[in-house]
Amino acid sequence: MAEHVASSIVGFVRSVVEADPFGLRAAPTPFDFDRVPQDVIDGSYRLVQVGARSVGALDWYETRFDTFDLWVARAHNGDPTRTMDALLTETHSLVAAVARAGQVHDFDLTDDAWGYQVRPIPGASYTVAQITLPLSYAASL
Figure 1 (cartoon, rainbow, N blue to C red):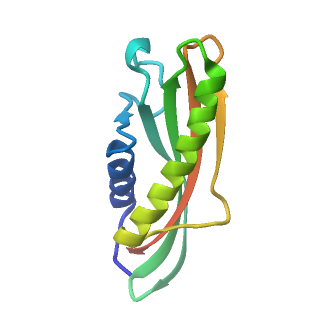
Figure 2 (cartoon, rainbow, N blue to C red):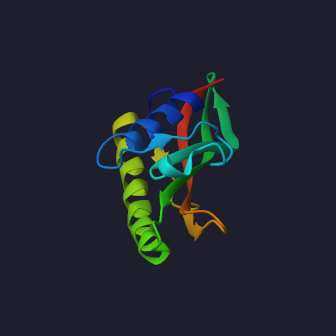
C-alpha cells in the first residue's frame, strides 16, 4: 500500500471532479457557496475534511480513515426537479469515479458510511448535492 497524507487524498479527489466528464470548479471558499456569483454557480464544488481517525501504528505507519464532504452546486434555471434528478445521477457517477481513482492511487472508498443528500437552497437559484466520502489509506506517523 502506498503512503499518503490527507492532502494527497484531497488532490486525488479534486483531480477526479475537475476532469472530464464532470468539469467542476472549486468554489472560492471551502465553507459555503455564498461568494460564488449566481451566474457562475453551476458546476462549483467544495471539498471539506469533516472527520479523521487512525488505526494501528506499526513501524511508523497507520491506517487512516478520513471522511470528506464533497458539495456540488448546480443552477436549476427555473426547473429544480430536473436539476435534482440530474444531480442524483451525477452523485452516483462521482462516487464511482472516486472509487476507481482509489484503485489507481491506492486508497479505498469504505462501503460502510458513504452517502449523499440532494436539496435546493431556499431563495437561491441552485441545488446542492452533499456527498460523504469515507476514504481509507496508509499514512506515516
